Structure formats: structure tokens, C-alpha cells
Length: 528
Image (cartoon, rainbow, N blue to C red; front, top):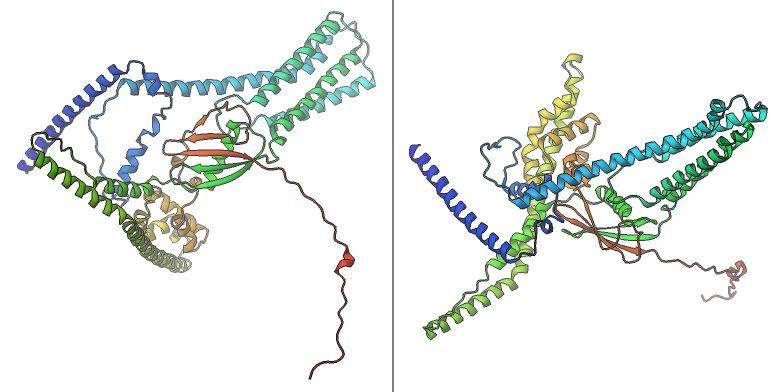
């Protein structure tokens, strides 16, 4: 044991010395490159930097390929002092991310505060028009008759209707944070503000200054304000909700890593709102992104590229040795070319072997799950004969039968490279759900045999994911023919191409009903 500990300590410090030596060389090279290119600054590095939180995504994916997925049986927790260091560029990037997040929160609260202030101004203005004459010159006002009192009821109900309509249209939980302001909503807010200010100016000049005695006319003036606000709300419904319902564009959405494609029909939307609709449909329609499926092709390409080696044989002192080295290099290049020509055979047999293993593991998994569910039915029949206090709940039943299928399920998930998408806790919860709702083994296995959409998996797979909209034109401009923009994420990006739906011309052709009539004539003489 002493020998082993001494050897491990030696290898650790020697590895650190070699790593520090290599790190010093890399830092010197990096310093030289930065001194050569003085025009570049740290800001150019942090323009499109991803958020600081998902930086461990790539390392976690690489770790998932070699980890043992026995769900806690062989898990090792490593603690101690971290050997990672932060450069000045990392500090600038993290600072920029924090500033962006703070800016988004401030903009969200500022918009909410502005909307609340504008809403209070709109609803309190008609009431102020009715109350100010009673407060400033009550003795000069004429008596309000029956028609004037009826207008009070009209104002009250119209304000109630306007309050409910504004609450239903505007006061909804935001679905996402957009990079730019919504143009139509901003225009409506400016229109309402100008409208209310103009009414206040007219009220101050013609009613407050002259202390108008006709209170019925003042009430009618307030009613006209409420009516105009109702019409503005109708305009808001048309611009914000109805305008985008009719399809005008067909967008093609392609995932950059695996080429999965979907097509959607969208109405008259801006680029940023079209991006929001596409992301919502992505979580519902696209299968979950699995980076582990892409590593096989990368490793295969790296293996074939590693077989091609070219040597530098510039030796002016020995021409014979130089010619021999050239001939050996040409021979190695020819051998690598022959291996490249047979790479399709290797790919074919690798895929066939993988499909055979998947079918084998799938068959074992189906049999194990069917036996487990059969055991559940026997347990349910036995529990019906027991006392009510001894009945096992679905959670306990799932924990009891899970070990019988765990090994087969683990092997299948590792073979199909889905082990990072499902944890032991999520599988047991799904099993308890199926037992509670009396579902079949096929219904339980469907979540693992067929990759589902992203929302089917845990919230950690999609909740904290941040998207970046990349467009050559302004994101507040509308969709146009041939518009192309990108939705970038940490692991992949969505390439969106917009095409206008063509105008369809239908023509009518009339067919005379009499043209379908015909006469069947039979010969009286037939051949015998």
C-alpha cells in the first residue's frame, strides 16, 4: 500500500508539473498572438458568448459516454480544491452576462410599471371628469335630470366592460422575453396616451377655465371618452390578435446538428415574434436533441483521418534516403486511400451490428417489463384479499418491481445513447404513474422506445435554455419572401427560411347534367 501511494503521489505531481509546463507554453503563445494582433480586444470575444450557466454541457455529454449508468451504485463524489483558473476574458464574459440579465429584469419591470400607470390614467380620467365639477364649483351646476342619471349607469357598465377587456388582452403572463419592443403594442400605448392628454387639454380649456354649468354636457363628454377607449381596444384586438391568424408565410425550420426539419404556416408577424412561435413549436414537435448520437460519426471520421500520415522528408544531405522516404510516403497515402474506399463497408457493418444489438436489447426489455407487470397484477389480486392497512401504494409497487427490469432498461438506454435523458427517479415516477392509471407494458415502454419531444423530459432539459436570435435585418421588421434567420442555442441552432404562400387562383367549370345521359342498345340476335 505504501508503494502504491508513493507511486500515485509521484505521478500526480509529475502530471501537474508537465501540465503546468504545457500551460506556460500555451499562455506564452497566447500572449504572443495577442501582441501581434493589437486591433482585437476582449469585447470582440464576448459578442456572441453563450451564458455562463450551461458551459458544462459539452463536458457532461462527453462524460456520459463513458460513465456507468447504474444510477448511484458506482457513483463517486470528488471534492477538493479546484485547479481551474479564470482568465480576463472569462471574467469579462461573466460580467457581460450578469449585466444582460439585470438589463432584462429592469426592462421587464419598467414595462410593467409603465403599463400600470397608463391603465390607471385611462380608468381614472372619466371619473375625474365627473367628480371635478362637484368639487370645484358645486353651487353653479345645473340639476342633473333623468337622462343625465341614465348616463351614469352607461359610464359605469362601459368602464366595467373596458376593465375586463383590458385584463383579458393585456394582463397575461409573458411567454418569453423578446429582444426588442413589440411595435404595435408600443404604438397603441402612444395612441392612448395622446388621446387621453388631448381630452384633458380640451377639458381644462373649455370646462375648467369657464366653469361650465351644464353638467349633463360634461357627463356626455365623459361617455364619449369611454366610447373612444372601447374603439381603441377593438383596434388593439385587430392588430395584436386577428391580423396574424391568416397564414401568409411557410417557414422551414432545420436543426443544424441532425438536419431534422419541420414546416409551419405563420401569419403577418415580425421576426422576433415568429422566432417565439417557432421555439414553442420546437419544444412540441421536434424530438429531443441527443448529442451522444453524433459522436459515433465524429469518431469514425477521426479514425479514418488518423490513418493518413504525411512526413516531411526534406533532407538535402542524402538524396537516396530522400527518394526512399518519398516512395514510402506515397505508399502510405495509397494505403490510406484504399482504406477510405472501403469505409462504406465498415459503415454498413457497423450500422447493421448496432441495429442487431438494439433489437436484441429491445426484446429483452419488452420481456422483462411484461413479466414485471404480470407480477403487479398478481400482487393486486393478493392485496384485494388483505386488510385495508396492508395495501401497497403505487410508489411502493414501482420500487418493488423496478429491480427486475432495471438491468435490461439500462442496457437498452446505453445502446440507444439515451442514458442521460432518463434518471432512476424519473423512471420510477413514470412506472408509478402507469401503475396508478392501469396502463399496459407497451404504454410504459413507449417513452423509452421512441424518442419524444423535448417537453416530455425533465424541466432541466429545456427550462434554463437560452436562445439567441441572429438576423441580418431588424428583428422588429415583418417576415418577407426569402427571409433567413437563426435561433442559436448552446448545442445547436435552428435555421429558419421563410417563403410566401402563393396566391391560388381557382376556376369553375360547369358540366351539363344532361351530358351524363346515355342509351344502351342491345342486339336482339345473339350468337349461340
